[in-house]
Amino acid sequence: MLAFESAIATFEGGPAQLRAACAGLSQAQLNTRIGPGTWSIQEILVHLLDSDLASTHRMRRMVAEHNPLLVSYDEDLFIARLPSSATDTAEVLALFEANRRFTARWLRTLSQDDLARTGIHTQRGRVTVLQLVEIYSHHVTHHMGFVDGKRKALGC
Image (tube, rainbow, N blue to C red):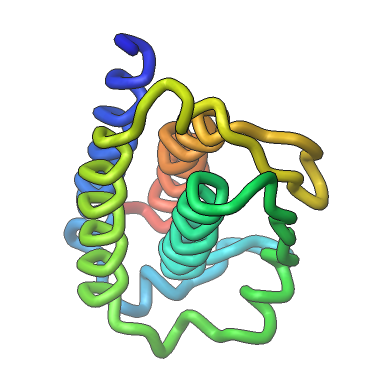
């Protein structure tokens, strides 16, 4: 359970990483794409929120249902068809933080048996609740490398 608690602590630290990544940036800087085919920092923020909402729903379904089908989504189409530039950054960060806090509290109530429950992801195949927690505990950190590069390219 120590590894699980560590994953939850990392999961809970995600909002602070996002807030630090946005600190001091104007809306124009947040919405700037540094090259063709890249995402802006704002698009990364909204992507992280979208994926967190999807992942927490999947985890809850896996605990409640028997081996549910977990349908993937096309993150590039979400960016292309659901423009992030008009979203309120503070609202995105607040919702991301609230979802992470709510989910972390819920995860701490789960038993070992709950963590071993499975679902069938349409891209990954069979996954456990614990595997999803581990994946999403590092999702923000993964994207912070891209954000750091974008900040440097913007001179921030």
